[in-house]
Image (cartoon, rainbow, N blue to C red; front, side, top):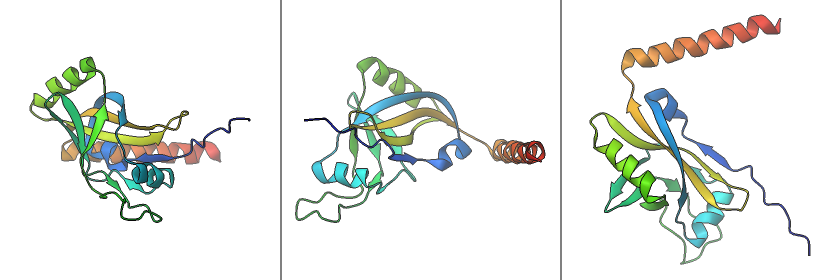
Length: 154
């Protein structure tokens, strides 16, 4: 029996992350999900808005991640917004924990995707909040890039 290739087109991004934060270092982590959560995720029913991570007792948890309830789920359906455990190496957890203790740094998820093996993964980043003038600079750079691409297209 031929094994079918799993669809790898599920990609959920946190678009505000690059605008509000300066991303310093990224890590790819597995995520612990229940049965209906992964089914809902495969349908693309998730959001990373207002999501952040924290370290508690040597484990990294993601808070406020919204994975909508599975439409065909019964009484076994999951809670949409609950804390979910991330799977990382101890070395990575220690690095994240040290960065989280520093003032001004936070841990935010930037992308949520399903890899080639069908496992849900989260890309988290150690980030530093941008000031208002940094955000204006980002907007200016984006507009300049857009204008240059328009000029070269003609």
